[in-house]
Image 1 (cartoon, rainbow, N blue to C red):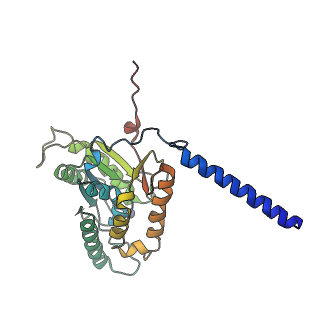
Image 2 (image 1 turned 120 degrees about the horizontal axis):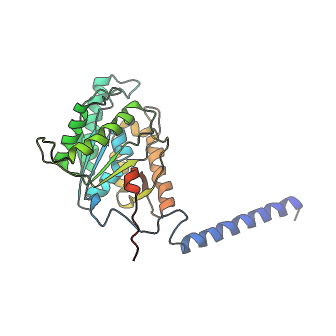
Image 3 (image 1 turned 180 degrees about the horizontal axis):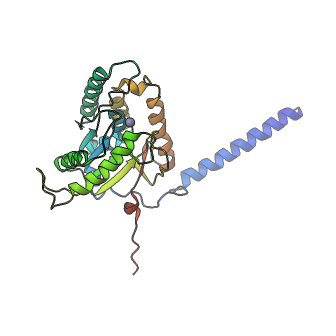
Length: 275
Ligand SMILES: [Zn+2]
C-alpha cells in the first residue's frame, strides 16, 4: 500500500466511523439538540382544524404557506388561502391583465386540489396599500372564514407588498376579535398566528415551530405545480427551493417532511407553574 493510498484509506475509515456513530446517535436520540422536548403544541388543541394563509401574492400563499393549509384539510378541517393581490406584474413576458387572470385560475385550481378555498382581494401588485380599508377588508374575511390559526408573511422582507401584508394582518386580527367593532359578521378570535418561511422574507426570520407535513407533502407539491412560476419561469426555482426546504426542515425536526414557522413574540411566552 503506497503512503497516498494508506492516507486515503485512513481518511475514508475515519469518515465512515464518524458517520456511523452519528447515525447511532440519531437513531437513539428522541430529541435533537435545540429541539423542544414536547412532541407537539397546537395540534391537540385543534388550532389547526381551521387554517387561513394570508399573503401578498398567490405564489407566496401556496408555496410558503399552502402546506399548513393542506394539513388542516387533510385531517378533516377547513382551509383558506387569501391573496391580497393577484401578483399580476410578476411575469417578465406576459401582460399584467392576462397574467393576473392566469394566477387567479391557478390559485383556484390549486386550492381545490387540496380541498381548500382560494380567496382574493384585488389590490394592485406592487402597490398593496397599508390603510384602514385594507385592514377592515381582511378583518371581514377573517370573521367570515373563522380561522383558528393564521399564517402570514414575516415583516423582515425586501418586498414592500410582503411588509404591507404583515402590517395589514396584524391589525386585521385585532379588529376581527374586537366584539365592540360592529361589522357584517360577529367578532372572531384567532388563537394562533405564525409567520411562514419565505425566501423573500428571510431577514430576522427565526424558526421556533416545526409542522409535520409528511402526509400532505405530495399533494401540496402537486397543487403548487399548477403555477407556471413554480418551475422557475419567472427566474426563481420555487419547486427546488420549497421542495428541498421541506426535506431540510424535516431533518431538523425529526419529521420526514416539515415546514418551519415563527411565532409572534407574545405567543412564545411560556408559563412555568410551580407546585
Ligand atoms: Zn410575493
